[in-house]
Length: 302
Image 1 (cartoon, rainbow, N blue to C red):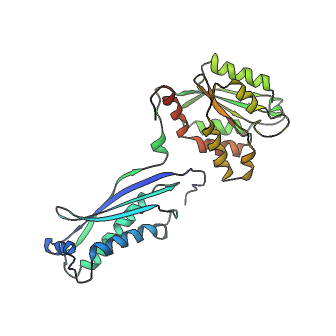
Image 2: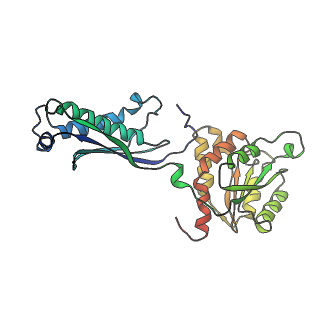
């Protein structure tokens, strides 16, 4: 199985379909509910729902997913019966395999009930018709990469006594995003120095996105949030909330972070934790939806 522990929950949905083929006379009996083995429509529908629930028992690499809704339908079609299944879940991975499994389960049960009546019975053309949810639904494109800076706040790293890890983690993560990291600097935990650098990046150097890492805790030299608040025109509380919520699901220490986020002019400034693990988890919590703030600022709405 793939590790999906770093992913966040989104509403996922998928619609799949397949077709049952047989003699017109036999297929008419399905909808007339006169098949000797019983009501094919109800049995196949129930079997499809049950199959979707047991998808992870049948498909080796599928995760057990809490399914929020399953609907299976059998409808008359030009050449047979169309079986469709729609599945929804608020979770970390897609549900298209669950939808396919539901269709397959319904078709198999319908086939079993009808095979004594039609020796030429067959089914197939099972496919995913559509799916929604996940990162691809929340990704924005830009004509030019978002101009981005990374600031590492640490007295010891600035003094050369410790190697930076969190800033490098952030930079590595951003290589797969539509941004250009044009600034990477290490600053001491000095409130006035941080304020001055943030102002210059936003006001003079045209940066659109600034990530800071470090100085967000409760240590005597942790002043990054105070420095950030001093330069912001507007706060964006949901960003800091998303970081802490995502982190709290992984470690209780995340609730102790005081990171802030907001806008100075058209520059978005975000405080991230100083640990490399916390920084990576924060980036995973924010992307890809974070960048939607830029078209919003241009008046393009949601």
